[in-house]
Image: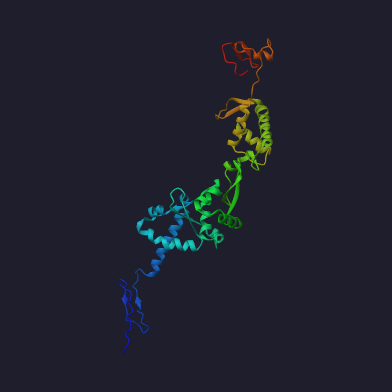
Length: 325
């Protein structure tokens, strides 16, 4: 009995001219110029991939983009077509997936090609740990928070930390507020001032000696610069840089912090403003009492009702407050 051969279904291509089946059973399809072919569809998928990568590289999504945001950006029609792209990029170590702690929604983070080689061979949990640490930025993430956000047991988490450290993807950092605890951040990031304490701390300890030296230099500038008639914070900063007083270049904001400590200690004071509206600082004026009484007289109950004269000629009458004394 003759065996029937199953007919081979020939794909139908719009506006294409189809020839008869050849000896091997496959149809030869001739496509007219200007038709959409399989290669054109592939180009469309490639364009979508490039758009996907470009979207995730945007500064807005540097720390990750959620599924909901992907639907908003690409629309309901294109969103399903992102699945093979996401899978391919994940296999290429170009994409990290993690759960956003605020919403519990899946989030995607793009990885630069030069970084992709560092992720080769890492499992999903390790990449997820990297993602949650990356999202913390230069503030870092406490070990406990990493465990809560990834739901990975501490023993397994310690191995992941070690692996990521060996690949120079993350680093442990300590904070001046909790020296016994450890947090992690990406290897190339500089810890924030909130963690290190800024320039006023050295090895997580408040540097009293360094600060005293800077304060003395500021007093010197106030006394000697501009004939003692007043100096601005910017002028003090420039002089400090020119004379190479310290290896660290202090910002204006940090200089103002130092100046204010001297103001609070009554060692310098504001003496008006210059033509640019910048505050001028001068040496604080000393207070002297009238010669009719000694310092211990200040303990007398009626001292605040006496007349007090300052060295610069300012007089406090009995009815005025004697706080300055």
